Image (tube, rainbow, N blue to C red; front, side, top):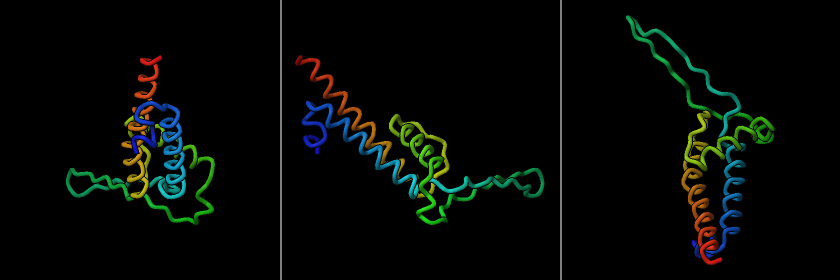
Length: 127
């Protein structure tokens, strides 16, 4: 896998192409299955004396697949994907599947970016 992705640290373009492909797959999965149609609203209620309870329901995706692919959802997916490559949380409410996709992207993205930088470094040292 290390050879296929970055040519043992010698092929920066392979690692860069793999990173772009991984980001595209992440965006597609988030648009299709990870970003809810509407952000869940928080509910604040008083629970007796001086206690307040804030509940946020789980994000759900309920409409048809053909309705999920829109410009706004794609824009949110791109932001979440770019944030996940640099280990930041986008703060976006995601479905459970979307949370898992973001977690995997947080590992794979920086790894591929590091392989690209390693290949560039070895090319500069040889050159």
